[in-house]
Length: 235
Image 1 (cartoon, rainbow, N blue to C red):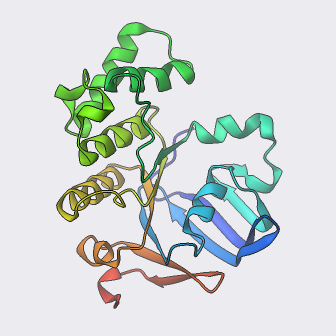
Image 2: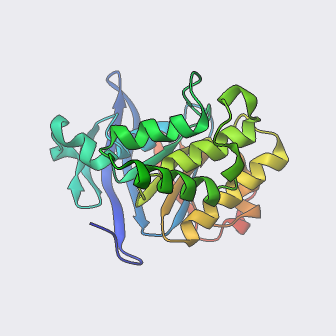
């Protein structure tokens, strides 16, 4: 079911997150609306990735209330996790493209794995997402023939394939040069402006000033909302 404009699509209340029985974060309150862009900032190891992994049910929440779309994460059965993940697109720092096949085949593989069967529809959708990320002429390329920035654009295209309601981007600029990184962040903001919510984990505070949005900070095993206007953030 598609989300409505400004609808709350994610709400965590007093959530605790454990990894290997150790507390990573506690008393987590987090809210996200459809089409909203949110930064998760904090040092390496502060819990940013753990929060993202709870959202797509790779890491369980250990306490509190956690709702994503119309799904209660504490009550989500393993057999139903795929239904949650179909509504979420994920962008990783290291791209995670399949190195033994072309850009087109990388994208076709995802569509086939999520139930697409009509060849014409598959071709049309791949063309649409490649156009959206400015990579229409790269479908025949192998990943190793692309720059880091181009690979990340393909990764974003892959995340968009099934028209997700939410994109999770985990340090998506970590392996990119500053200029390319800015282009990727701008692209993610554009995706949010077009109605898909985006949560981006980063330790680069410059982005929060250059591309303002709501900012949460992971620090001392807690998640704090810094400000609705990230222009106020200081190093």
